[in-house]
Length: 314
Image 1 (tube, rainbow, N blue to C red):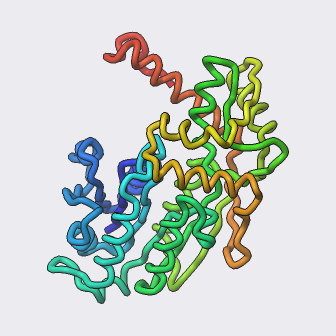
Image 2 (cartoon, rainbow, N blue to C red; image 1 turned 90 degrees about the horizontal axis):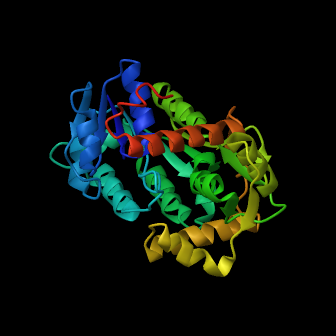
């Protein structure tokens, strides 16, 4: 039995889909009612608990051989941090103390695959929560595989939307700086592989794409996908906080994201020499093309919500 938690975001959904498609027994844990409804009747064991409570984790972990832990900000397509710290503390409490449905010694048998991020070891920005979780799981779990991911290419979706409609690609990145990136589909493939063939003991992996990209590369890839001229715009750092709040982040989450981008721009989020590097295959242009397809589907679905006109759109 595999437990995917949280399963409501695009990464969790894709991991669950692949595992179910391969005939695996999968349980999901999420507070998102829409996500629970999505998986009911599709061969998935839907746990009704809330990941912010240790008792829900304890119940969900009962009988599980492998946990794929995907905490916020991977929770939603908007990238919201949500209750990441609550998830972290509840999971660690469940693994450490157990409960009526879950014995603490089972934590030593469960294989855990944790999705983390570059910078977690330095506890930078929002990755601070992931760094704390890495340390806590390492101290209480025998079999732990940590996968630290580079910046996810699909996080550029808001810039692509602005470029499509206004021919300007706004970004928190600066000129001439190279950034390690990886496509979501490569990340999902690595997570699924790590879950299906988990390693014994402690392993630290670091996932990058085939190459690093700078702002010029990003804009050029956007131009090719959109087939139009677009200009880059490095957003003034003094405006970042308000921009992030306007995009839906609360002030605390916006502060953590601001700190993370600042350290990226300073070149302080780098590869950890203690991690085993893994290279994804998808290029930035491939990921942005998928972003563009999704944008087109959403726009046409808004025009025709009953899909009478655009049935079968790909």
